[in-house]
Length: 281
View: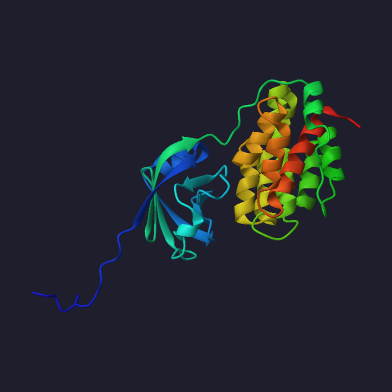
């Protein structure tokens, strides 16, 4: 017999199931016992979530693999994010992300912290030779001066002027700063310069606080990743190439093709960080 209270009510559609590859930076969040998350925003290519203190980005296979991201085995043209609503509820845990109408199972992992080869100042100078270290509308000199002087206070002061500079989810100033910070952290390790590594670690908390106050939630999360040496996949390819693991020109071109301003700004910041480590002029 039909229940009159449920007559005419259609059952909810079965969620579309898709697999994904996730950043190891998200391992504890995704494999944990369960976390409630909230949709911060979405586009054809990505959905970004607030899961506790972490920002998680779910992107399609034709989007850039981010250090805090899960990349799906599906393209943007499939429209998987069309029904996702702002502030919608998400469940994250047990290796899955459950969104409205979409179930993502993480089946593989990737490390957003590129492994660089040991290098020397001379080799790094040669590798970065001729690559641009500036972008329009960004004054590189305060950050360059602070990095060359190994000045923690100077880096924080320069960062304050860059954070939030420009439009978009990841303003150009943020991308530039993220590239420089990640390069300084990772290339100092490749050079074996412990004092520089300690300096970046020492400013991580105040700089992360600055980012949270001065730019978008999405971009602040990427700044925090950069401070840990975690970068988007194309940025990692350029950093590896600068230490002899790959083609510098090809990886640089691959990075500057990302987005409208993000790729060029990230690339220029990486070059600035590399040059500032080994040049005092």
